[in-house]
Length: 224
Image (cartoon, rainbow, N blue to C red; front, side, top):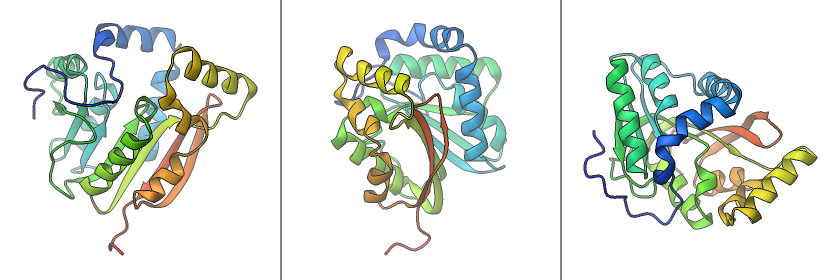
């Protein structure tokens, strides 16, 4: 699967297409190693297995996607999707340079156009705070649909702040950057949204930097 045509997919969610060329240097160099450590933590809780089919939603430039593809090996299938075509171009270039088998597509997460039950696991890292309440509902519904029964979802994103500094930073970002999409995250609503989408056994398995949580959920083996 390739990004194909490079017009931006139809989505009302925020995207980072205009800063794609800056994304890797800024994230890697200004996070002082925290981004790489966070990816390692996400990998621990995703626990990709050889031969699995895994979808990375809001994959950006594909750094996490490529790690997952290495873990599942040549018998697995890893796909990264993002609504920013320039992000996908960078991800595809990185995959070619590394000889990595990950596949990428420039599509909107609320309308990915893939078959039901296509994946053993879905992962989303630092994506949901870019979309509003209604799009969060649509995206989680799509993740649920795309998972096979018994499949798992790992969601890593901004959550209710647990320190004064994180609270100030989070709410300042919401108002100064005019980003109302942050509110569901900052109010701690992600677990409820996951439950409403049909996911079971939602657990917060990690909380780092005072405002980023990792949640693990499962699609029930048998639908009610």
